[in-house]
Image 1 (tube, chains in turn red, purple):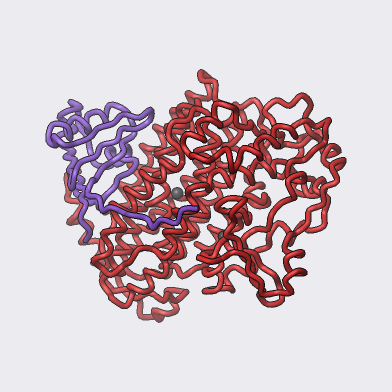
Image 2: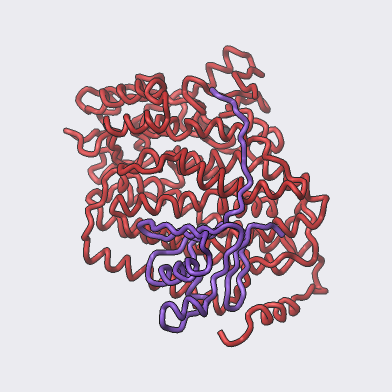
Length: 516
Length: 100
Ligand SMILES: [Fe+2]
Ligand SMILES: [Fe+2]
């Protein structure tokens, strides 16, 4: 680069103008409650010309690897990981795509050009990430021995009950104040959590024999570097005006909890239960990437601007103790409504859990014993049914009402406009109360399937193999005989919302637990 | 359930994660030479470099180490992540722990 990037950048910024033929209010489409100065802090200084040079190079390096992996088939990937990727990739590519939409919206609302510029490049990045992940889906579908589940992954991102967690998160980002989107997405998800996921889990990907995913993760994260800078520049710009401080605090309070439930819980589940060659536990990852790097190395320094510790951080810490295990009870317990093969944890892993999470067996051992006894299609026992059926789902985060631990739930309910709603925690309930319009319309699993036989639910979801009978999901990697829709029907499990009972007992307004 | 309030200690380490390969090795070598306190760790797919307070990557020096021309867009290709506040200039990247 012979010319000076910094000088050219300053010159280009001076070309920005305010049109006379349209009012600012019309131009920026949606109002924001934040106060934005005219001049913003620069994020990563990148010109579109350098951007394309850089991204082209990233693509050619990554696709060379993908190409080679397709030809060589050298490694023998770990089945646990490969089956888990069906769920992970289906949701990831949907999250990336909606992040792209959010960036476009932010560029229409946030006026300062320094920030707009960064957001616009991020639109392109997020489209790139969606495509990268779809290419892994395609690669795995063609190379993994059971393509079922990969083939419907994108559809499943729209209709799976588990995907509701990620949809509710993405939709919150897409519909909240656009400046808040930057604080929640770029500052929390992309700075705090994306490192933990894309960098932290790249090691697990390699150890699981999935080089393609490891390369995907790291090349995605290299764009994330600019996204973190976008978030930081937005935040520093907002901090120039004191009126923003309480607004920022409010957004941070909310997204500390939303990011934790909507992203970190899923990530922890993946790290602890889909990585067979275990090294670092999800709790250890969280301590390193989240507490030390994010809260210690960044958030704490905001105190001098008057930003306080996030309101729900103690709850996040408490929930994080057991979140991965509780999420596993949900994902494994509800196996028939998913679209991958399960490989239940073995004795060695149980010992590892007890060591990393002392007391684990006492809380979760019974579930795993029960799970193991109910994998045989001929015996026709469904673990979900035998353990009391599916729980209620939180109206905000869409996680089941069993956190932090099934035996010690912080779940609570609320009567709202004639409906009984469930919340996983006082945090989600309070987020709802602040902005009910935002969350009340989310149709949960029970809104769609209450009173249906589980077999009809699975049929409706379309999670059947080509014969129209055999389930995509199987409770074991290699069951003696694969479960079919007839096996499920013989179990006579009617999906029933637990909220109906609560509503009948309490006559409204009741709240279970929910103290903070 | 324990209900301890989190104790967050402020940290002043900064660092990067570089996608593993000869460019990352070259960059790590330039850091090792200039920052005696640097902690360099090798993972299967990336290299982690951590330095107290502040670190600068000079593109010229990475080029010297590689023995061939090198530029900023190519370095950004392997810069998978960083931790700290980043400033990208024409020929160097600085990451510091200070805000603002
Ligand atoms: Fe992304
Ligand atoms: Fe919730």
